[in-house]
Image (cartoon, rainbow, N blue to C red; front, side, top):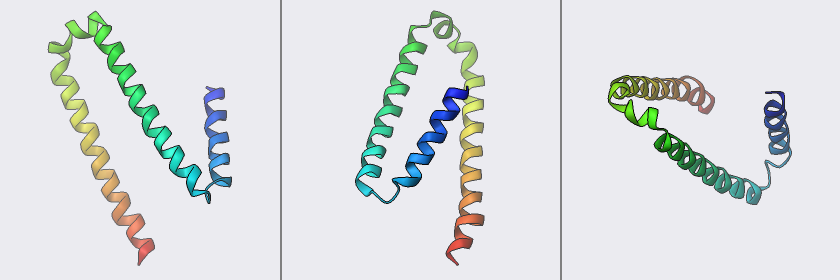
Length: 92
């Protein structure tokens, strides 16, 4: 866990010093999007290859749907709250 935290902090530090270089930021955005897509694919591959999860989908389907709906609606609500009460105030 310490190694992960160190990587995160070093990335934040590098991002702070490189924030005015738009080419690096654009490249970083593309690499990050590609990495996220690759990780989602690999996660799907792992789930699809796990017989226990595949056999339990019928049981877990409702619970997964409720948890997903709650997470998405909570994220949308919190994002809207942050946008309205924090970012709009800075613009006024």
